[in-house]
Length: 45
Image (cartoon, rainbow, N blue to C red):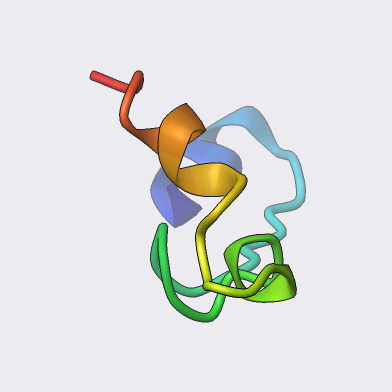
């Protein structure tokens, strides 16, 4: 991604939000973790 940004002469901002289930903020906001987000993630290829 850094190389592509350099080629296009644009800035690059990388944000690491953890993995899909633990540590991403959204899945951690419910008890149990992932109650809302797991059904969404199950539909992702």
